[in-house]
Length: 227
Image (cartoon, rainbow, N blue to C red; front, side, top):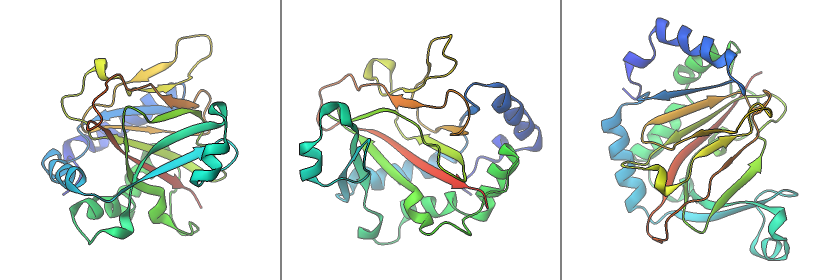
């Protein structure tokens, strides 16, 4: 129901895996992976919901409070964005989609793609590892790595209709240091999967290039572990 079946055939998965392993970093970009009509319904909820809160990380500590953020230098700050408050909303389609992304059915697709058995069996709070985020023109995600012991897959799904490169917000991988960074536009229903331990996987988000305070860049971020 959530997946676009045409994008997860055996042939397609074999092609994705081949492309994934040959790329630096090990990553794959899949457009149209999910049912777009259902994503439209999800976006309607996210755009109407007041349940967003600011999230701030420094390089020395995650989820810092306002006092710690104020005392941190600009060079120490690496993330400022809004996160969706999952525990503040009643069950709805947006919550259902996040649950699907942590389901055995979806993780089995990723397990095959990355040739590793993914599971939440040893993850203390799986739900905090899959959520919606949004960036305003004053927000940022600076260069960082997502590698962590046992973390095998990172997923980014973009939810930005009618997005143009003039707006910025591209994902950039450091990639092969002998070449230019790999830059990927955050287009609607575009999904990126990557191995956070692979060479060149350090990444950042290019600055947004608009001044409209009511315009946001939306995405889902999800992390997956092996046993």
